[in-house]
Length: 250
Image (tube, rainbow, N blue to C red; front, side, top):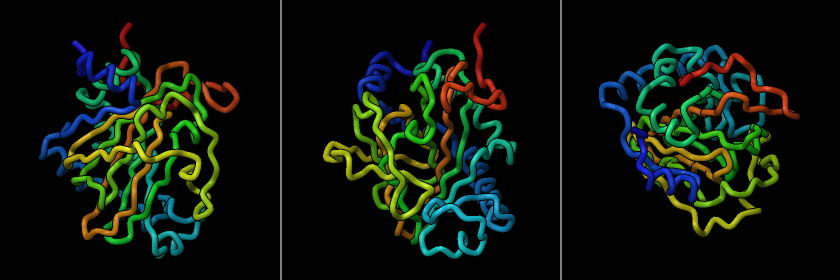
């Protein structure tokens, strides 16, 4: 039996996203928070992170001391066993299977951290504007380890925007991010409020962004990006075989 109802699946295909609500148990959330904080503390010391709020640099002091902070660790699953286990978490894969089918491969994962007070924005974009994958049917699970609302960096999406790919341009603020906010009508945007341990799934062409976090509350999020085997990128070169198969039905 699929994890989602036919109505939920139809909603996803029409709108390009589906909010699931709380998907993780409290004790699991606490473990993931502890490990998340530990990994970011280590990353800030050994220069194994990016600050997306500023242009790409290897200068550790510049990244750590920038007045705006939008911190990213790629492939958390290769650093931490708890996050390795999370990408195989059955309730998450069950939902992904409802949306893209029974054979599921990891494209990549990423931890996206907005600290309290100076957490910065991720601008409007489609994920496949960065990835350039084909077929363009990848699906992302966006998990939050803290309550996420409009003030501290909840996800904003534009329903139905997955139906048309757009050309992307680098932000004038930071070359680490695209920003196509001036190309699109955001009047129909929806804010996805999630509790700690909550999740939403979105299509790789769904327009989305997260606003700055100027609250005294941090916002810790983790994204898992799923694809089907045979997905290609960069002038139709196959995606790397280092991306593990997460589920396969033969």
